[in-house]
Structure formats: structure tokens, C-alpha cells
Amino acid sequence: MASVPSPRRGRPPKHSRPVLLKSASRVLIDRGYDGLRYRDVAEAAGVPVASLQHYFPNLADLRREALLHQVHTEIEELSDNVHRLNDPWDRLTSIVVSAIALDPVDRKPEWMLWLEYWRAAGRDPDLAVDNLRTQLTINELIDLILSEGVESGVFKPRAEVSAITKTIVAMINGYGIHLAINDKVGDAEEAISLVEAYVRLMLQVDPALPSFEFAYSRLA
Image 1: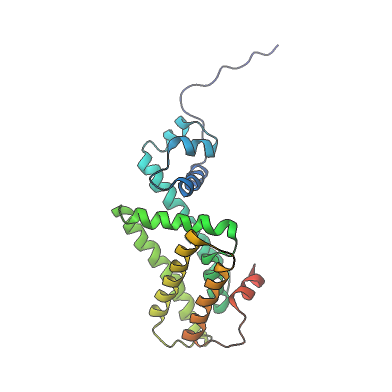
Image 2: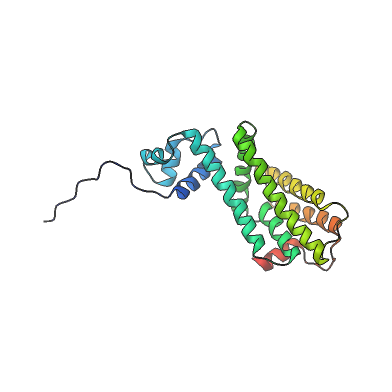
């Protein structure tokens, strides 16, 4: 009869750091930034608390890294989706609809995460700096889309591109706060429609261009 090997001692088993951070970000959404605990994250990730502490000895670091990991991942995905497209209207459609989020299953958790991010950034100088970089990245992405649309003749802006960009971002973030707290059926669609109305007015686009929702369904 083969002997059963003794349990290995010493270093904890290897786990995927990104997977641990993803689990931590889900817990953070449920419990809030300040309420995140090792035990809850360990249970969500299916790992011992000791293994989690091996990667994140400091709870404050785990909270911050979980928050930043998910925020940065969402920004990268937003950027990747935009850069897969060539048409300026399709690219603007993608960034607006993806940011507001049509899927109710994903929408509330995504915006709850951003609320936690902004709340934490208001108290943490390092997160405040990161938030400035993140907002700059989003603004530069939309600036690029609008500028390319102007060059191709698709967009004919009534104001400075940078001013239109800031307003688009402010509208998305403003509706996002509402959707995180009081999301009702049709609210996301209404938010997308209102952003589109502003975009059409300020960019003087061809009325024949499809609505954001229709264009996005075609891109999906």
C-alpha cells in the first residue's frame, strides 16, 4: 500500500495575485473600502487567510491594491474596446455605453466600485493622485476620439473639444452615481440617450447616424 505523503510545510501554496485582487474587489463592493477584511476575502477566493496575508501583509495595502486593480482593469478594457474600432461615432458609442453599462447585473457593482474609489481618494493622498491620472486617461481617450472625428469631418464641434470632453465625462460620472444608488428599469437607457443628445448637439453630427444603443448592439 502506497504511503500517504506528509503535508508540505513552509511557504504557502502559490496563488494568482490578480485572482486574489479580483476576489478582494468583489468583497470591497459588498462591504465597502473600510469594511474589507482578510477573512471575507479569503472565503471569497477559497484560500487560507495565511496565504492571503503572505501576498498582502498589510490590510490597508490589500484594500488599496484591490481598488486600484479593478479600476485600472476597467479603464484598460474601455481603452481596448475603443481601439478595436476605427469609426469615430462607433468609438464614442463604445466608450459612452460601456461606461454607463446596459447590463444591470454588472452596472451596479461597477458603479459601486467607483463610488468607493472616489470616497477613498478623498481621504488617501496616494489614491487622490491616482484618481487624477485615471481621469486624465479617460479625458485623453475621449479627446482623441473627438479630434479624429473632427479631422475626418464626422464631427463639427460648437466648442473646444476639451470642453466637450469634460462635459461628457461629467455627465457619465453624474449618471453613474445615480445608477449605483437608485438604479431603476430604464434609467441607464435614459442616461445614454441624454449623453447622446448632448453629443449630437455639440458635435453637429449627421442625423442619419444610428443611436448609441443601436450602434452598440451592432458592435457587440
